Amino acid sequence: MRFKTTNQQFVKMINSNYFPATSRYNTMNYRRCGKSGILLPELSLGLWHNFGDVDTFSNSLQMAHYAFDNGITHFDLANNYGPSVGSAEETFGSIMKKSFRPFRDELLVSTKAGHDMWQGPYGTWNSRKHLISSLNQSLKRMSIDYVDIFYSHRYDSNTPLEETLQTLVDIVKQGKAIYIGISKYPQEAACFAYHYLTQRDVPCLVYQGRYNLFNREPEKDGILQQAYENGAGFIAFSPLAQGLLTNRYLNGIPEDSRIARGGFLKKEALTEEVIKKIKCLNEVAYNRGQTLAEMSLAWLLKDQLVSSVIIGASSVTQIADNLKALENTNFTKEELKQIEVICG
Ligand SMILES: NC(=O)c1ccc[n+]([C@@H]2O[C@H](COP(=O)([O-])OP(=O)(O)OC[C@H]3O[C@@H](n4cnc5c(N)ncnc54)[C@H](OP(=O)(O)O)[C@@H]3O)[C@@H](O)[C@H]2O)c1
Image (cartoon, rainbow, N blue to C red):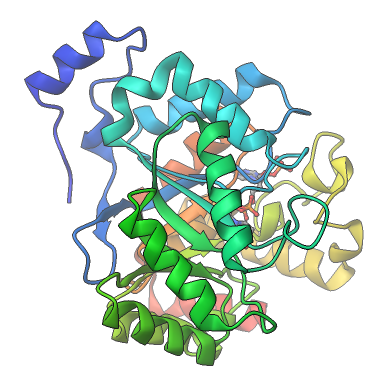
C-alpha cells in the first residue's frame, strides 16, 4: 500500500521548521500489523546503536530525517538503548523538539522495559513497579506524552505473568501507550499473553523477535505462525545479524564497524565458517543485482507474516542501501535453495 502527501500535510510541513521530502509516502510500502488497524512501514528504524550520547548527534539527526523522509514512520527504542542507557531516548527527545514534533501523529514510536536499566531491585525485569517507572522515565526522555507501542522487552520467569500483562493493560488504559507488544517471549508465555490481553480488550499488537538469514528461531519455534494465529503482527529485529549479513566484514573488520567499536557483536562471531557463508551469500546477492544487506532484508520481507523489519544503521548511506531492498523482494526457487544450502 502506498500513500501520497496531501495538500494539508504539505502546508503543515511548510509551517514547520523541518521541511522533508514531499514524496515521503510514495516509495514506502506499508503492511497491516496482524489484525489491527495499524500499517507498518516495511522497514522501521531501530535506535539501539548509533543514537547514544557517545555518537555524533548530527549523524543521528540526519539518519532520523532521512528515514522519515523516505516513509519510515516507525522508530523503535527501549529504555536502555545508548550507550549510555537512556541516551538514545534522550537523542530521540532532542530530535522531537528540533524537528519531529509537528509530525508526531505521522510517527509510530515504540519503547520497551524489562532489561537492566537502573540499579537496585526495581531497575530491571517485569514487575509492575519497574514497567510503570520505566515508561514514565522514557516519556520524559523522549519528550512525548505517550508511546504508540510499549513492549515487555523480555520474558521474566520470576514475575507472575499476570502482573506484567495487567500492567501493560493498565498502561494502555491510562493513555500512556496506544498498543502493547511483547519481545523475545518463549512460545508458551506468548500464548498466555495473547489470550490474557485479548480477554482484557487490549490485544497484543505485535511480537518482536530476532530473525535473519542466520537465525531462524521464529520459524522453528513456531513464533511467526503463532503471532499470525493470534492476530498479532511480527517485527524482525537484527535483520542483518548486527552487520554480519552485509558487505561490512567481507575483507576484515573496519575500524568504524560495530565489532571494532565493541559491544554486543564480538569479533568471535566472525568465524571462518561465518566469513565463508557471508562470501557465498554475497555472490547470490550480486547475481540478483543486490547488495548482501539488500538481499538479507528482501529475504525477510518475502514472507507476508513479517509485518516490518527493524534495521539499525550507522549512516544515511546504509539506510539508502537498505531501502533499495524494497525494490525486489521476490526470489526464484533456485535462489532460495542456494541460500538454504549456504546457511545450512
Ligand atoms: N527486542 C529486542 O530485544 C531487540 C534486540 C536487538 C535489536 N532490537 C531492535 O532492532 C533494531 C535493529 O537491530 P540491529 O542494529 O542489530 O540491526 P541490524 O540491521 O541487524 O544491524 C545494524 C548494523 O548493520 C550494519 N549495516 C546496516 N545497514 C548496512 C548496509 N546497508 N551496509 C553495510 N552495513 C550495514 C551497520 O553496522 P555498523 O555499525 O558496523 O556500520 C548497522 O549498525 C535495534 O535498533 C532495535 O530497535 C530489538
